Length: 558
Image (tube, rainbow, N blue to C red):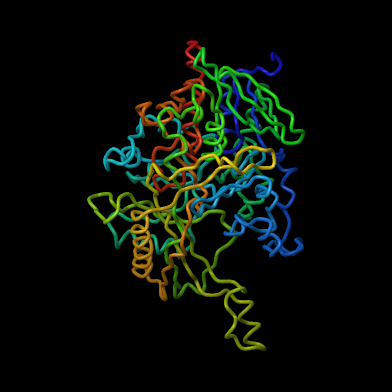
């Protein structure tokens, strides 16, 4: 037992798990980080990062065989030949759907921090007070001022490029110099500001560094981030958190380690360790620690808690409130508009900026009232069409060749990312019949968007069209391409924070009410979704929780 005992255990190695390991080890705790998948080494493991499309058998695209082998991944843009190895084997790790649900997973060291979109925004007090104001679900147990210093700590380490805008609904952070909007984006932004009192278009705030930072090279504008960055220009566990943790000498990393349950001691009313199934050998091990950080992602963290059932907690550790597995949220998207911008024939873009523009939320703020609650933001970009634009009607010969070698029309598109409310009956639960490759119960998804989100999607289309047309774009077309929960890849809310153990799973410091030495600081902890990309908030919650855990350890309270 002694050799398997540590000060802290971290379950999961993605965005929040990596941050937990970094913070714990830097505070002097001997920490083991357990990852269910394989290890992908920084730089060495990014085997396709420098490949060109013609170096792949199918030019980096998707094939019918890939769609057959990856039926969930094949539903969306995420399936392609170039980074297929980063996505979970769906035959080994299936799940069931009572309602359509798109679950895109990466089981390896770094998790989805290797493939994330890197957009990094703070939540504001509009978000932290929204549930209380609207009488929805439960109130967040924290406010912006509680998290602001931890946002700053994380931003300084991660490296977030962005512009300071002084917007109350989107607090500014500690930014690196922003990336630059192109000429059309700048003009559209200026026209939006002129036409609307409370609408702004800004450059995205992204975890791509724009100047050297912590032995990482600044962004090279290759826009191949989803393949892994050999320059370390975007933040991931591999590029930043893991090197920092390893440098302390306090980290043990164990890949191929599926945590099957948290071991609960009913005498001390604390967790004493975890049970681990070795994914390669099928042998079972136990690891022990004073404090446990559960960062397996919103759905898998719920799985670990539910699978940790005992005679004390028959529905799982953290189930006393009846909220474990419930209040599942995501960001709904795929609704917006795109159009053509006349002119600017003498202007072009240079490089491949790994970032877009952002329009912060403006609906149901500042006295505006719609027939739905909460709101949405927009992400998008402007650019010139290339040779792959529609050529069906082009003539042959010289005209055809000229058209292929000249830049095309300027176009711009924006798509909304909307908040989903925390409905109690949007849930996940353990299947009683279906097992995965290792004989473990799989999750069942029973969640969907509702009338509030459907009404919001109408505005997401119509507002986009209106803004683009007022900004001078022509032939503006709207779209609502449909959406199943999970498609935003921002799963949240299955073990929410709250003020009352009767209505929440976690307290204001992310401690499980039923076992206060267990902290959950990934998306499961979210009490509401807001509409901003959530990863920065996960990391800030994690840093804050680690600080609290270390303080409580010193006081011998956990």
